[in-house]
Length: 283
Ligand code: G4P
Image 1: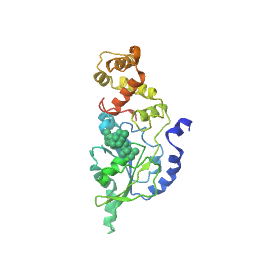
Image 2: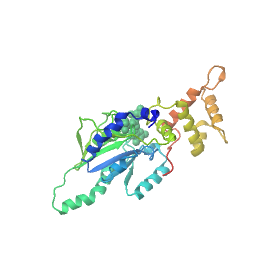
Image 3: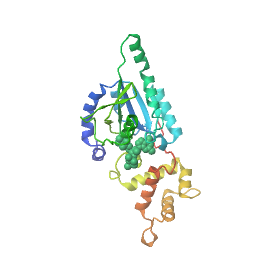
Image 4: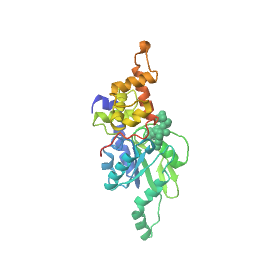
């Protein structure tokens, strides 16, 4: 691990993984939350191996911010691998009610077997895992029917946890498992920074903005043109200057204010001003 990687994901996150593994043994079903814009980069590299014997529901959260066609491509990919998947928007609650239906589907065989044997059904125990800022607390609050109570990005599972009853059949651990994302390729860090999964202070902001601009210019050129009002093909330097001039992001002497233009580009992305954008495109 390089120094930069350690900065992104503090050592305690790794250490607590062992603790979380023990918790996972208690679960009948595990919900792994992915960022729909980054289904590969937001997937912890170890987690599917570790929970391979458990039923898993893969939730593509923030689907409202992703490119729907690309999300569908990833959904098909994971379904072909045998996973049950669901696109959700935990913030607005879209498809959140389908989580229980999907979970029932996953567990049906097991539960039917129990019924056939005349055994009593006990509530299904489940927990939510995912990288920081993927929407774990938002989803827990939605499922619990409460509005706030943000769980901090503390790693693993803290001691003071409780089971939240969800419907008649489910018990959800109120504390999510915090995972680290993949970081084996430098562009992953830029994608995580662009979408706000890692703090702005960690990577140079100008590199993040340059990455976003170049990515949009390659994959979504029309949306970039529509947003900033230019036509034809411009280089990224020209687009940058165009934004500076048209948005009045200028220093004394009419020089482009690079910091402000960087901020405009990344803020526009995070505020969904380009429409749904997916950064991970290849499976
Ligand atoms: P975490 O527990 O996994 O760390 O994430 P958390 O629920 O705190 O969510 C992080 C941010 O993502 C929150 O924004 C939350 O509202 C937003 N969010 C969660 N799910 C969705 C979703 O499906 N769609 C969209 N568009 N946003 C979602 P926040 O509290 O406003 O934080 P900030 O990043 O705006 O400061």
